[in-house]
Length: 252
Ligand code: UDP
Image 1: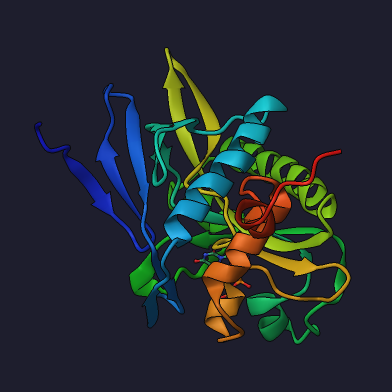
Image 2: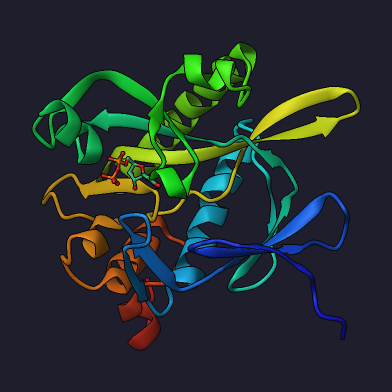
């Protein structure tokens, strides 16, 4: 069988050419990195869980009319997605103060924000992904004003959807990062949610206990990341409960 051509290897995923010129296969690795890859580990099973959870969120977004690049999951570690031109801006949405915003502005972690706050970061590892304003994005040609308006609107819709999904399973969506890409349909351009949506790129806190169910567990050495991701996948209903799989089934 001919080997597929690899297009790009990132920190958590590998991209391969898809079966058609306008598709790509995303392979989810088990690698975890933090602090711009200064901290690294292989977390067995992480790729499988993120593939499944990202499928779950992207499918839901597609269903409610928020366009994404997701087409279908192919197997445990791979999904087929539309090829897009990724806009070189990470879009962060925050509902609660945490992480870099708490540090930068001295706002205590956990402080609810009066409205969702959107930030843009320029995607460049050698610069440590610096925060930028819309002015930079327009002046340097990364995105137009119309793109930025559309990106904000997409990000807020993703925030509403993800907040609701998480609230339904007793979890607070503190913040998250998405990436957005351009697809061309004839002479028209459309923006779609790209990359992945997974606990690697969200902050998720249990509403009752405050337990962290995201990559901060790895960043801050709070426990076993694979266990936490498995708990999240089980609560989302995308992975069978361990106890059910292991033990006898209850019959009504
Ligand atoms: N985030 C991400 N990739 C990045 C930077 C941030 O997925 O390269 C996510 C992060 O997981 C969190 C949100 O974006 O959910 C906001 O991150 P923050 O700016 O607070 O940075 P951090 O404290 O994670 O360095």
